[in-house]
Length: 331
Image 1 (cartoon, rainbow, N blue to C red):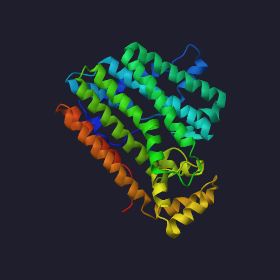
Image 2: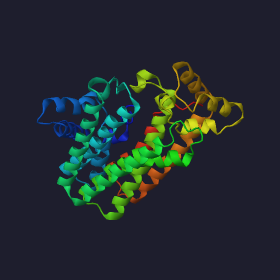
Image 3: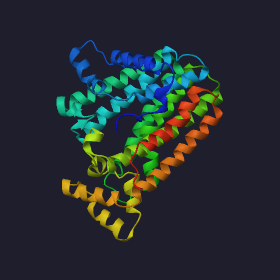
Image 4: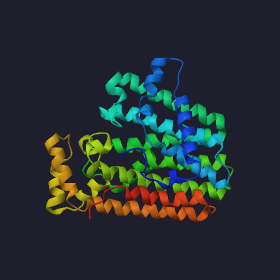
């Protein structure tokens, strides 16, 4: 999935085009180094595109105060985006991935060592930005980086594990994906000087939205094409990462689950991958995963009940369902 929801209500707020320009300028500036070579590597996925959804979440959250988003909301959101980008650089090394966002990965183009160090550079710039905003934001971002690591470790320890539990999956995506959206929303509330109950509600919204985001991403890894994704379809299956649609299909038991299990538990060739994808697509694992995503949509909508009425709250309320609607869910 491209980084963000198509036609998201978050992009329809007044002045959002201006705010997105502010985000774009800030992120390009943040990845600039005194070394042009490092700048080129660190900018690689920035130039490749992306919706910049995490900064937009921070900006939208700050607008709940009824004022234009302050610069610190843009900068705090950019810090979250840099953490995300740094994690992608590292993930692509771990996965030995060749493409990301429709372009060569950094590791494929420059090598693993450069990719690791450029990812570290992005994390350092994120930390520097967060520290300039204040102690609370700096501590929050540091803790979020820890949550990302915990989520990734949980995923790695169950690689090629056909007996992986749904609890393991949910714990992993909470750490590696949802926590960063919760942090982006929380930073927006903090720098927007909202009341603490509203900051907490924003955090709950961000965490729930992030869960929807990852489940939808995992659905699209099954249902979309390589061209639509900008990376190979079924990549998680090949890498032994068994996501919710796959786990639900395995849980069917009988001939379906048993046939899928017989294919998994090891690296897949193209023919095996396509057969596994066909099994998951032909059964209710995808639609069942979408039902779970809808539960997180409801949680995000409920969190909005504790936010002040207005266009920003309306955008936050509508964004999770719009994200889920962007996935192609078989009937």
